[in-house]
Amino acid sequence: MSEEKNHIVPYRVYILVLLALIALTFSSIGITSIELREYTVAAALIFASIKSFLVLTYFMHLKYDKPYIRAMVGFVFAIFVVVIIITFLDYLYRT
Amino acid sequence: MEETLHDGHGHYDAEASKIGMWLFIFTELLLFGGLFIIYSVYRFLNPDAFHLAAGELDVTVGATNTVILLVSSMTIAMSTSALRYKNKKLTLGLIGITLLLALGFLINKYFEWGLKFEHGIWPGSEHLVNDMSQGEILFFGLYFVMTGLHALHIIIGMVIMSVAAVRILKGTVYAERAAMLDNAGLYWHLVDLIWIFLFPLFYLIT
View 1 (cartoon, one colour):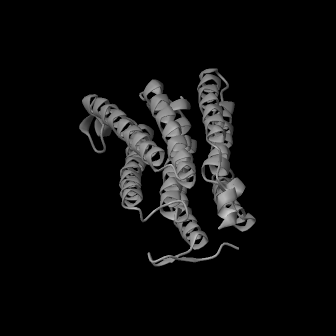
View 2 (cartoon, each protein chain N blue to C red):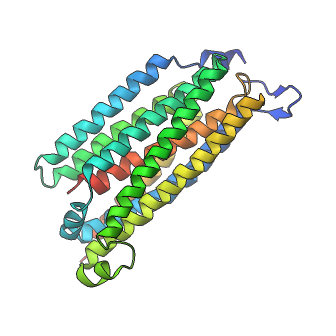
View 3 (cartoon, one colour):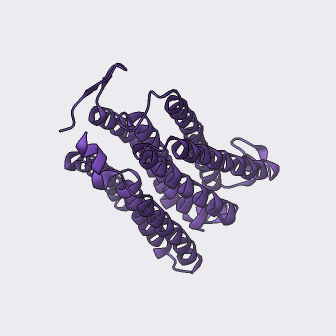
């Protein structure tokens, strides 16, 4: 039980994370409104990835969880990335 | 290692509950992940049509909904802390705010979809099938399926959070037995996480 008590996250942390998330949202709107051509998608996805990292780490408590839970989550996202890469290796090099 | 708790309300194991919830979240991630892969392949095959169709979506509405979901994610996260600080009133208040924000998101979505319907755009509509290209039909098909499935998750999340609120009121969920609220929070963050990717992919990349 004592361990769980140490895991109380102060409200301040959540407020700071929210402010960062909102700032990132408006930055991503700003950056995609500029004409970057093929880099627009990349820029939007980079911002979305940073935001999801913040949500997973702080809102979803992964920072305070045991390492094996973090490893499981990381593994699932890694599998997803691998599937996307394999799919596009197929589409990009189809003749 | 956390110990299991036996206190008259039956067996309780916070860690096991958490793992169970995460395993469920993984299946949800792969469900939406599959849809994201379909989106990216069709986008790759029809870049111009997706470009054109995405212009039909209103960035302001999408951004408003993004902010609503981010704030609601913070309030439900705060409620799990409030429960551990043994502040029942604040916990319930924060869950209440989260539910109101969720409702606001759905109302926003209702008007957004309503506007599309007014323009004659819905799955299988005459305007969509007769006047639009294959790529635009695919874009709007994915738009309705993915935001619709996401809205369904919002409704389920609201039900789960309501159940958690009732259990906190009844006293079966409390500081030492917080897993139910924690898991409701995890589900809600998942809904937020999915929207974080839906928003740029449908609204921003025009």
